[in-house]
Amino acid sequence: MADKRLYESLLATARADDGQFLVCGRVLRPLSLLHCVQLEAIESPLWKADAGKPTLFDLDVAAQICSSNDPVIPQKPDAAALRKRVLIRELGAWVNYIELCQARPELKTTEDATVPRDDGAPFELFIVTFLGRILNIPEDRAWRMPAGLAHWYFDAAVEQVTGEHWIIPTDLSEELDRLSTPAAKAERRAKEQIAGDVFRAGFDPELRLKLLADLETEPGRKRVVAFLQKRATRLKAPAKTKRKKKGARRAR
Image 1 (cartoon, one colour):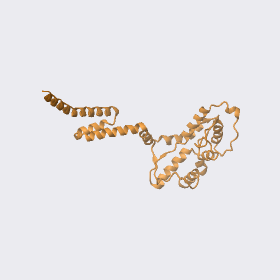
Image 2 (tube, one colour):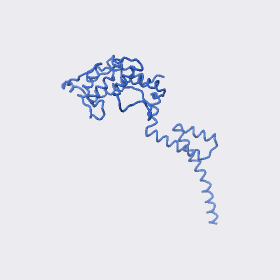
Image 3 (cartoon, helix red, strand yellow):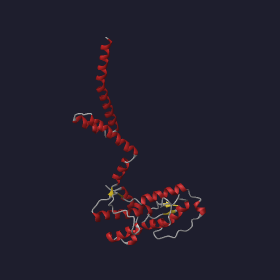
Image 4 (tube, helix red, strand yellow):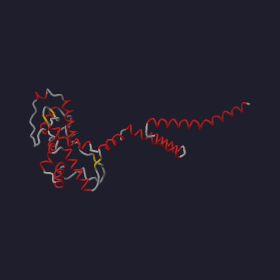
């Protein structure tokens, strides 16, 4: 099964050639490592979360950089032209562009992970050098290919070099995200509590397995809870009946 993020990174160039990435009236090229370095260098708020809120000015400058496959010295945007733009619309187009071009693989996190690195050469340069040395990808192509695709090549090569698997398939990543929501965590805790009640009840193995299987669905959990409540009521009922009989003897 093809990975959705890998597919998006492979398709980024075709989308750009089709003119689908349009920000502030400029047709953008696929976001590359070269673009990433330039946006980082100018501390663009569209690239650095702590650089403040982005403006139409920032969007136009970023669009100047990303509309070229070569290094760019950004020019001052035309104020009159910017006034015709709608910030939220241009920002939405930028976010869509970034998400599609940076559809890099999601990696497992361990203390022994090869990446990310906190020191040494800038990470973009490290990737370009690695791709050239390990995969013989020309420097010019490594700098200008979609950034997401560069990360796919890099992380896949790291797996081959280290013999360890770091990439998490998209479908598994989405399932992990779903299971980590507060609602999913609360659902798991409730399921575990009900399962504990089933085990403590001392049912025969066949009934216990049936009840535990029912816990996998919401209607099934409701049936199990109702069953346990009825059982608890029945267990209490004889004691209440016995007390009434004693009271009746006293009355006589």
